[in-house]
Image 1 (cartoon, rainbow, N blue to C red):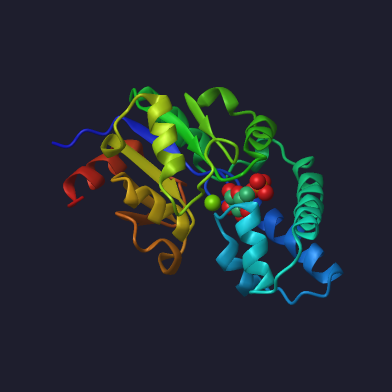
Image 2 (cartoon, helix red, strand yellow):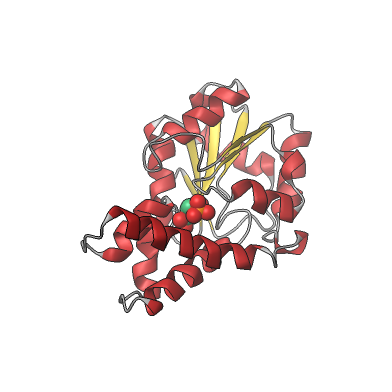
Length: 220
Ligand code: BG6
Ligand code: MG
């Protein structure tokens, strides 16, 4: 039977709903600058880095580098104002139980987030100490859908990629995990995460043993 030794979690949209805050911060910048940007456009920004998000928001419009930097800094300022409101009550339903159960199973636990704010979000949620390794927007230079971040986290956990399961809400994240041979659990809409080995609406009521048996039974 294939072995699973570690779970690696994306942060935004899997552990907590900061995806909405990212959207509102970009939307504020876009509105202030007269750039058309809808919730539908925002779908393409899910899970990708700050710079890649801005490039997608600009839809091909080219800006000088200092202006790019200024836009990214402003969006981050708006985003960080939302972070001040985050408390442990903002953990998505089922996450606390799922993390505790994974640990009780002896699995290693990693974070694989593209966000440079990931450590602050974990700390506001009160769950930093639940992770054996934390990969964030500073860990690697090639961001999702490149596999680098998940490979980096697996290395820190000292677990081969083939023994890791990645939990992701973004297409780019599922692609990144598949690229390095990890198992994938997509959280949310099948239109977004349908390429995962297993798709769940959320982690609410989900048991670790259920996930392990479903993944190891299916072709990988
Ligand atoms: C990802 C989010 O986790 O982090 C993206 O899904 C976000 O929406 C990216 O753009 C980068 O985040 P930050 O905090 O470094 O701007
Ligand atoms: Mg995400």
